[in-house]
Image (cartoon, rainbow, N blue to C red; front, side, top):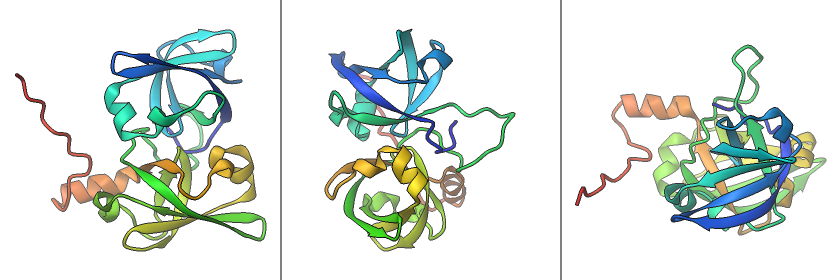
Length: 206
């Protein structure tokens, strides 16, 4: 479980194919504070640290994660948003983020207003029931508030601190981002029998 408050930016050092997915090495100041087996959100995707070595974190990305997130398109040298799993003995900022990406969105527009920035993003049609105006959304792992909402797009405003300390400042029109809708809203809609976000296909046992 995470909060969507990014702790540090890491740098992708290596991407290596492995059994349908791939392995990543990320250089980060958080490495000394992590242990093997701990969870780390990378651009909003929950990964497991498989090795900590000399300021770097190693993790594996499975085939399904590669398919349904933007991690499959990561390039060496690219910055990534990082957040360790939340502590339940501290204050909860942001909102509840699981690190389970619901879909990939596309940046339609980036525009300034004073010192802040507005992002307009398109989302897959299946996610429409899970967005509400003034609700929460995680964009590449960053907790943001839906300030404007249309049938296929939503707007978020990014304050200067968040802009300066996350990868959001690198986004341009056409870029793809990981989206995670508010967990509480997903459970409410599921309980009401209105939709089934992320229904997985049953695997053919043959």
